[in-house]
Image (cartoon, rainbow, N blue to C red; front, top):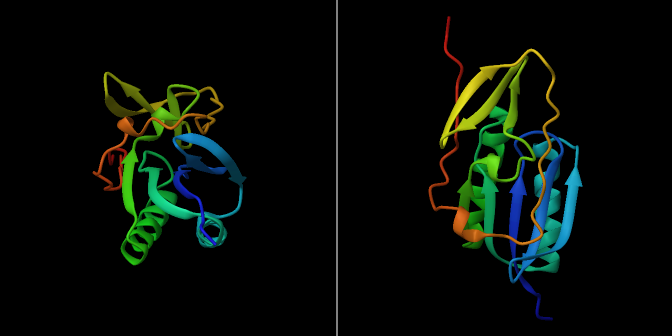
Length: 154
């Protein structure tokens, strides 16, 4: 049986985790889960690998939950090596419906003039990520190193 060849996009910076399956850059399957990253990623990848031949994996490398960023990076790097799948990454602002990504407490990451900073914002901002219907792979690079933006130490 010939499995369809697809690309995968993972947005796992905060909950819920979003996984998109793309054929010819068109979204053909949408997965959303609020489960822990460490619990759901192996199951999702097993199911996807059973149904599809994965050509490339695209993911958000930050900013966001430090633990999620670490887990996704280690998991995907392992999958990449074992299954010989090329990885590409970008920052999460490409998929955020606003200009903010939740950091911790009253802190949010904000992108201004291509620079990502940490800001304290007293009001609660609802942060949502969306999978695009059309995947623009030109927005990704082979620099897959996790993007850790740490607050200043007082």
